[in-house]
Length: 177
Image 1 (cartoon, helix red, strand yellow):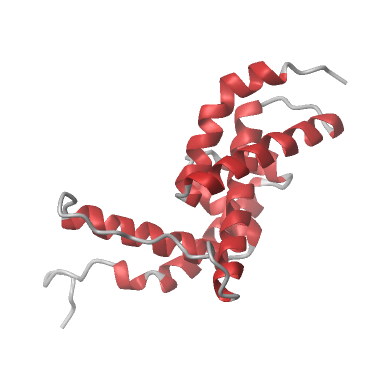
Image 2 (cartoon, helix red, strand yellow):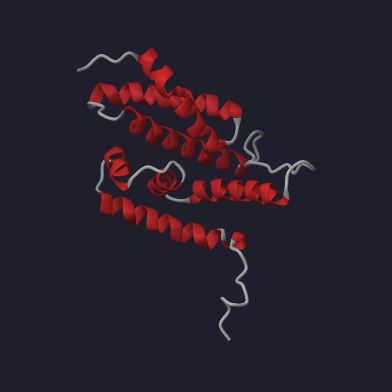
C-alpha cells in the first residue's frame, strides 16, 4: 500500500472539491461538511484500492456526497425540519431576468437531481456539469462506458420531462401546421 501525503492532496485538490460541492449544494455550511466527507471517504478508499487518478476520484466522490446532501435536505424539508429547504432563489434588482431564470433552473435541477436514482444523478452531473468523459466516469463508478451512457440517457429523459417548463417556446418556423 502506497502512503499518501494527505496535506498535499488537500492543497492540490481541495479547491476543486470545494467548487464541485458548492455547484451542487449551493450552501456554504453544507459544502463544508461535504468536503470533509469527501476527503474522509477518499482516505478510506485509498486503503482498499490503488488510486491512479486523484482528480477523477475526488470529483466523483464530491458529486456523490453532494447529491447525498441534496437527498438529505429533501428528506428534512419533507419532514418539516428547519434547514431542510431547497435552494431558494432571492431575486435582486441587480440581477438580470436571465440570471434569475438561471438561478430558478438550477434550483429546480438540484431538486430533480435529488429525486433521480443515485447512479443516474452521479453520472449525469459528472458528464453534463463536471465535463468528465464516459471513460473517467466508468472507472470511478466501477462500470463500463455503455452502462454510463445508459445512466446518463435515462437521467436526461427524466430531467427533460420534469424540467419541461424551462424549455424555450418553439419559434413559428419550428411549429408544423
